[in-house]
Length: 518
Image (cartoon, rainbow, N blue to C red; front, side, top):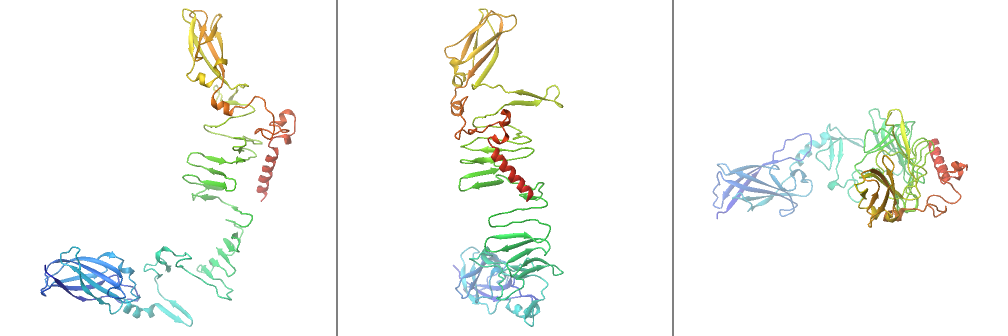
């Protein structure tokens, strides 16, 4: 196996400009010979360049590789900084700290078996000479002031400043008190001026940090003033156009006097618009475990309380809702001049529903544009089920009517009754249940029609859990009404104050009126 040696000449070419900046690359020339001193002509070799910090064997701060072909004189021309980086970046080399050493490694097979050809020290930082020449053209001293006439940007911690002054902290920890701070402005002992200001062309302040702890966004007549006094953050407007007001202490206030507030949208159409993909509003009382949220993945409104109200709502002229949870009412709604609740769509209740009256209201079939049709519900002290139909008797004057498969499991089947009505000319008819109570036989005049109705009382497990007695005492244990109060006081000639939730409704009215006057 042949051995190879590498002789090299290092050339650094840097254009002198008025700005002191690190080079993006520099020229490097090397002649490759074998161990006999013969030049390797027109041969592809692998070259790896290492730049060490402080000593020849110090930490490699930058490494890159080249695949080059020697010319007729065994010469290769490289641009250090434009190879294939394997460690670090060329622009990230800190030339201003410690000495730097360049090490060259060669692989004559153009593979990965590199052999070191030795190291040599840079005699000067590649851009230090330029910095010395151009410094006076950038920074000037006038009395105790130092200023720059640089027409471009100035970067601290970055070679690509994004503004007139860009400050970058290493590792992405800018502003973290336990790491590198990005910008520190410290007040003097007797400073009575403003610590920090951003002003417009006419020196009008847009942003000011005062020596008394106040921060002002905007001018003195408009905008937001922020102050830290040890108890929190106090934001208040300095002018008549109040946009946002937040105060800490015992009271927290959000006050928007004009316009709308949008969360998740930049085009709110109401006083408060909240947009989101899952739960858009969540509130929780951590002491009692009560919580409520709006617009979850399925429910529009969800309220939960261990022993109080899941949801309380009030409206003077449209919709008001009051809902209790596990130890109270499943749902209670009241409105003074409008609807207590208005649902457009299906409603599901897991539990029992109690009401004073009930009906269906639909568009009138004969005049749907101008009239409504209302029918009242059928009420019964039983949990009544009704089945009905028609049957034709055979030549023997008999027929069998089969009930649904679940009839026996759902009802008190042995107490179910059947009402028969002859169709056409009256005739005598009768019935009897089969032994399994899943069907009954009708007797009457042969080949005649009869209509039938079955009445049955529910007897399934759910009705045993949720059913209530027909008559019960009022009291503190009764979820509907306590003793001495009425559900419908005015219907019996009692004053409104005798109503079950009169005191609660008065409090809600007072709260609404108070908020209107604020």
